[in-house]
Image 1 (cartoon, rainbow, N blue to C red):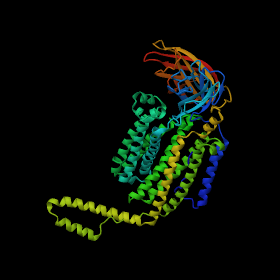
Image 2: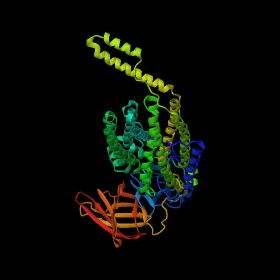
Image 3: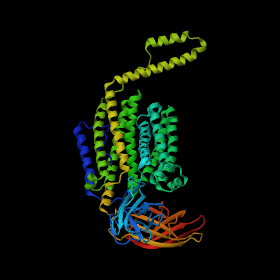
Image 4: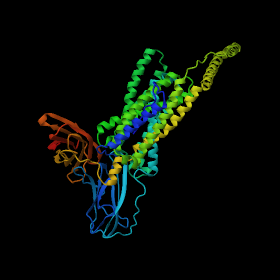
Length: 640
């Protein structure tokens, strides 16, 4: 999902034709992999079926309505509503019942008995495992179709004013991350003198402020964004608590904590580091800042990877670190480009060596982007029809085209960089200025001489800066480079916006599968989905219940694991702690620990659970229902 050609590096390609050939080759590799296809990847759950089906006419009133989805979802009160022709509720369940089994994700609600004939509307809303809200509606009829006063919802989940503000915050967060990380990399790697430049300091600090503010807004709006769509619910403490129990909420809180560490990094970079004059001390501090800043930047990038597309579907254990690398490369390239633009326009001191070092950083970044983008495209699209016939695929094509334009503009920037020189700027004042300054200093009364001297020093500094700026602006190579970098930055802003749109768009593969009505779970090559049911009793109050476990596809390699806990009353039951472990005793393998994430009340899941070989595996489940009440139960299952 990213660039497919390298940014021109320090060893320039002499002819545009060579650069174009390289771009075409890498683009062909991307689309060739897309054509090759792969096993399905799930992200953005989609409705794959219902009973009754959309538009069906049934002779007698059904006892329940069930909906099937392509992947695990989180549901809450009123997630599925059935309305009669007059608009009254026809279902009896406040919260949908989880009817999932095997590889099928299914939820249902019971209906009142004795429903009259007519057309009924089913409206549903849920949260996909990749954190995005989904919704829809359809109708079925009992006896014969009739008029209905129910209007199908025109606004999808996550829409409306709350959705607009939330999306603005998402775009702002990505932009802030790019400026924060890219600006810091530019100062540490390309232009260390930039640590003392006020425009560079402002750029990085504004990136931090934008990312922090956007993250806070997203955390507060998460509840109304996935639920009511009302701004007032942003301050509902119960809703905020429920958000913190989800993966997206935990990711946003983690990001805020990491931004606290990033603030310390900024303070050292533009404080202690900028004031260091001893080269050895500065070198040691550079190493420490690079390591510490790299850890913080990686952690912030991981907050996106752990809660969005990369965290669900096939090969999630590979996709998440790949997504982190992708985000870091984007930040180093585009954030560095923004830093270079600021340096060229707002500071007189940046030299050709810093520009060439950025060229090397950009080259490495785009190589990483090409590799990670090829993998992500293969995972989320997988076919020509999904590439050309879905919104996700069309946005991906647009992104590749923008990168091609960006690289073409970058080629002109590289040409200006090759001609760039560092003109010497006389720091001394003109003889007349010096004589005048000395004369004024001598004439000044003794009690105001220090003040006058300070004023003259400021005037000399301003004069020197003006001279440097005049010489810089008169340099045609530097002016040409500024114009081409400005054009690059303009294209980069559009590119970043398209990239952000991709993160909130249903992947092409899933959209195609939903349209065909087939779930995204692939049929296993061997074995089959594992379904276990184990009763437990921790001995304490409300300590009895049942654990249901689904492992799919139930074979060696990567598996998705889902756990449901039902209380003694058959309703979903939350517990303070749930742990699993897998052991193959015949081969002395294990126990392999599994710590699932909570998706909803009584529902946990874990992606990419690795089962190294086939056999009779013992599955241990530890359930804790209070501070002191805990039990471990086990059951064997044939896997592979």
